[in-house]
Image (cartoon, rainbow, N blue to C red; front, side, top):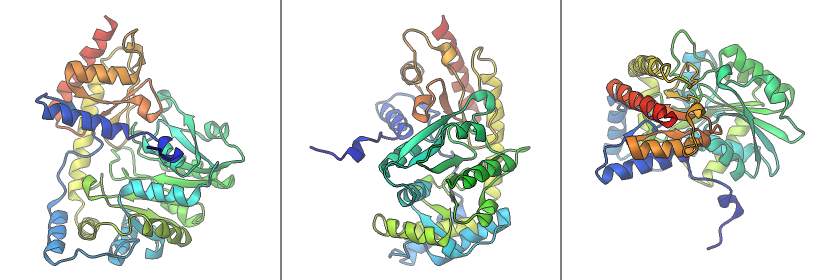
Length: 393
């Protein structure tokens, strides 16, 4: 069968592939623990579930407006107002099938063949492939663990060309958990705007920032530069709703119209009763989010204490999300000489699933998700430390 160059240019999601492998091994009777999953281990809050159930009971199963129910778009605008003090109209907001479709639609709307998109690395696995699906060229700007994997304008300057059209920022980051403080974020955005580079800011983990660090967002910056910035967020991480597929975008209303055209010809509206659940989430209590945030902060500190005993590993202290991204290439040997081989050997020997750093653009590292119970996390990391020490023996 002949496939398009477009589909041949992209790779399957490494994180989903690792999780599928772990599930397959479990189905065969293996006791596999996954530290690879990019989703909270909490249940969706009951009031959200009840709202979706009520919508089903009432027969709310028809098409809705392509960019989302007006009341949900109003609730999204309300979120930006309550959280960041930003005023926006529902014409400047749309809802998509998860943050992933928000990003995909944006790149389809903004990138022409040959356009370049700056992506600080390490990066979320889908960014480069989404750029390629838009027939653009992903340009990776590397960062170092010693700098908390945060890019600086002087780093970006080295990679700008006449074809640079877009930059994708992500804070807190998947895979590193590292986080741009407000001034750092606005400095980069200001640099981009001054060079006529459009800024996409992926803020899907914005509620999972751990004190003393504070939440940051480009939504206020967007108010000053509405033609040059789009904010992507969603409910997957905030309310543990990964399977519900609810993401949203804040952007100029002309861009929202363009995105709605793309969505209208691809997926149409988001699942109707899932939107009712999302509405309940945005308008209801955030108490569960506070509980989740406190749990993740505790697990992060527990994990860092253990990782600090791995002689040769370098791991920045993340301010958010629920990932650690230690550099472990000091443990590589002749047989295990890459993050992919390390993760494969770990899965086979210890039945622990991690994601290779290569999937995120840094083969020196591995991604660890601490969205598991404390005792499971502690056991896995102690075994991982012993496994790494064994590679040096």
